[in-house]
Amino acid sequence: MAPTTQPPASPSAIRQAIRAGEIRGHTAGLAPGYVQANLVVLPRDLAYDFLVFCQRNPKPCPLLDVTDPGSPEPALVAPGADLRTDVPRYRVYRHGELVEERDDLLDLWRDDLVAFLLGCSFTFDGLLVEAGVPVRHLGCGRNVPMYRTTRDCVPAGRFAGPLVVSMRPMPPEQVVRAVQVTARFPAVHGAPVHIGDPAALGIADLERPDWGDPPAIEPGDVPVFWACGVTPQAVAMAVRPELMITHAPGHMFVTDVPVASLTAG
Amino acid sequence: MAPTTQPPASPSAIRQAIRAGEIRGHTAGLAPGYVQANLVVLPRDLAYDFLVFCQRNPKPCPLLDVTDPGSPEPALVAPGADLRTDVPRYRVYRHGELVEERDDLLDLWRDDLVAFLLGCSFTFDGLLVEAGVPVRHLGCGRNVPMYRTTRDCVPAGRFAGPLVVSMRPMPPEQVVRAVQVTARFPAVHGAPVHIGDPAALGIADLERPDWGDPPAIEPGDVPVFWACGVTPQAVAMAVRPELMITHAPGHMFVTDVPVASLTAG
Image (cartoon, rainbow over the protein chains, first blue to last red):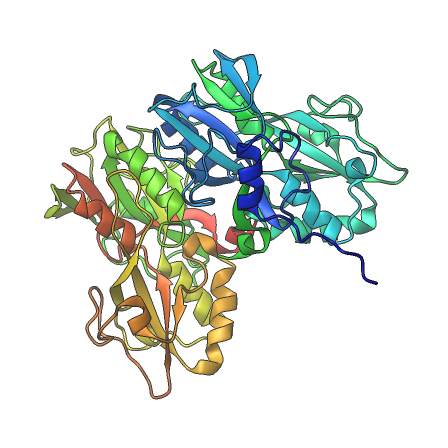
């Protein structure tokens, strides 16, 4: 007798469950095959500069959608969704300081807020795994290590700062495959920014990442570095905006966009 | 004895010659291998909505660079260039009406102007020709035919309007090749939006394009439609901005970006 398996839930069913409070945890593995996104919410008066920053730095800031000021609906990537309720956990920053985590934004939302959704590396790790490239941190239940580099992003208005990268160690014979696979998906950070030498990016010690967990490096592994979605958050935080809201780490927004559609021109 | 040929001029040499008034004509064929761009200049108060419009409609509006307000330097695609002088011919629109063509913008430039550079189909036709796909309008010295469709762009703030497409007729056995070649270059409009049926896009008569010249269709040809850079110009014009400046048709801005680099993620 064949085992009975539930079909995977659709993105809208996942969002509905989040909205109803039935899902409050990490979104990794939910709605497989669909793009998950980082959330950054800023007041309208900062939105133009942030948008230009994303346009000038597409590798760390692959912009998937921007809402109309005051509208919580990401009409491009998830029509009908509500960004005030459909993320399992939010972080609220005031003047650059984390002031609270919360389950919804209903009483915080304002007419001048603009939400940005940016491609996320959850999508990205899945692509590598499917291509047979080992993703070491997944294997041992750690978060990916992330590092501040000495490479500056292209500034835009008030936004400026260093590129943040994530690092995945892998056997040398897998590096070409990893480049090929990720290069096809610029909307989730695309091809690596560097292969091999942490010092070339100004990273002094791979064992001491600035975010995430220390890497799980195996003998002979080559470190491969990709632009990371923490970049725009770190850059926005440095401006110390009066109000900024993001998803809590790992608690992403699930879009209706099939990963496979991202290669389309 | 080998013929003596001049090496092709570099993009910066071309721009210098334009700035010096030595080039005032079309830019087709200049600096081969480098991306040419459409220019749209708008006041800062319209720039945010226009930027969001481009983000939401990347196929007709592949944004290559946005200048800082008041700066005429496209620092991303041509550092050191000056958008007030480095385009061979400009068009000035006031409240949606063409009021003049001119050779430079030196006495029109203002501190609140923002320049947008968008990928151009000159680049695009070259890719097709190199891949062995016949580009009929080039063969007979015509401009590509362009059509207003019944397909709406995703609106953004004050900007809304129909998608404009360009059409290239070709033998059926070339269509797959044409899709493959152009899909690799989303920054110059990417893959076609439609193949085969003009009526599916609301185009009543291929012989009567809304812009450009009538098509040169050969027996058995299939019409292939691509998103067109006239879309953002038409949409911006419909807002009747107090001031809008564009390049004159065919008189493009030559960037330092090698075409081959556009496939990089």
